[in-house]
Length: 116
Image (cartoon, rainbow, N blue to C red):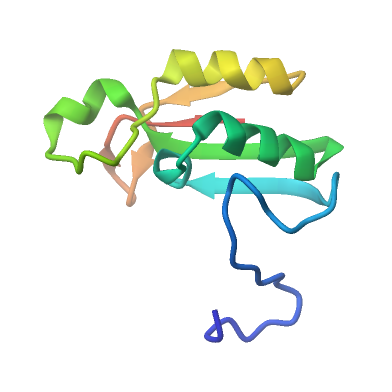
């Protein structure tokens, strides 16, 4: 991460299931197509909740499992079931919204979804 030459950016290498940040460290957590790669999705969601301030906001953009048949994916990829992910997030966060079939790269609808 040497290429990021900005002192206002916190640079950290680690696991989404076990970060080095203190409880309630962030006002805002953003992940884009990252949770699908987590070894343990539930642990990743719990870790995001742990490092987020009480009134903080999280935005998760990820691939929708129902579209996984449209492309060839590696066996280790865990595309997310939108409804199941919503249920898990509602256990951790007081307000959860989902936006379906968002634009990707300007004009392609790729069955991605945003949960915030």
